[in-house]
Amino acid sequence: MKNVCFFNSTQFWGGGEKAHLEYAINFKNAGYNVWLVCSSDSVLEKKARENKLQYFDLKVGNLSFISPQKRRILKTFFKQQHIDTLFLNAPNDIKTGGPAAKQAGVKNIVYMRGLAVPVKNSLTNRYLFTKIITHIVPNSNNTRNTFLTRLRPLLNENNVHMIYRGINFEEWDSRPVKNTSFKTDNEIILGNVGRLEEQKGQKYLINLANILRAKNIRFKLIIAGSGPLEQELNTLISKNKLGEFIKLVGFQSDVKSFLSAIDIFVFPSLWEGFGNAMVEAMAEQIVPVAFNLTSNPEIITSGENGFLIDFPDINSFAEKILFLIQNPDTRKKMGKEARKSVIQKFSLDKIIQDWESLLR
Image 1 (cartoon, one colour):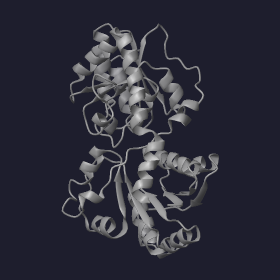
Image 2 (cartoon, one colour):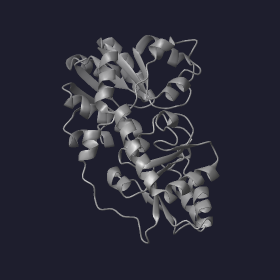
Image 3 (cartoon, one colour):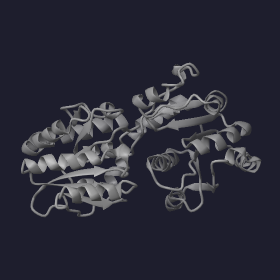
């Protein structure tokens, strides 16, 4: 593994795009020759330029996989740059880039699986996962298990390897922190980071706020993110007269400064391939409270570095938050354990070693 390419043509910015960018930067820093294939005018292309990464513009659509021209362009690119390892995760990119890489003789064609939902046992997937993709790598054990739900008769489970999402904690710690404050009357600040959509479960936070208000807790709940659920959440906040307790602050490019301004991280997601936002909060010694779902138990040891709550018991969710509010010394101790645990388990140096061991 010497010449590495991360292929992501998605226009919008999400967890998969962030992962590709961070891996590209850190593989480059580790001495690899790194390229990004991305769509022109995409957020990823902009960030590739900002980080002085080599990139190749290519728009990929639903039918690009049947375009001989697109395949020819990619095959030529892979050969000219002597790409030996290609990372993909979006369906259109896999269907378009995978076969082109196979024709170009790319040794490692890696599917980075980040969605904890089952995959169809379709003719296309059978072809891609048996004839094209050389390595299937989910980002958590839960993602691995859900990926295999319908594909076990087709795939050798021993060839589906799990590697956690790696985080460069040294780079994270070096980021400057802006003096941000959400407090107006010494309230406890609860924070959530995530795209505003059903998967992220922010509607459960409305019920949580109602319970905490009924207990006369002085708090603010700050939700960072944008997405299709924004209008509905605003309507629920207004309907429940929670405007002074819940604030939607939109997408936050400076997540570290946001996290530095909260006291407890609330994570009501219904499913996650890997809870990256939660891990970043834990790196800031912020104790998380989350539902006991999907990959969350792989990150949180309940009672030690956070709390896991049986879904959908929002009353127990509120009780653990109340416990953390009333026991600041315990919260501080658990925050230190949270940071220690994620650095030990998800440090990028360790994760890159895992990739090198798999792909050498």
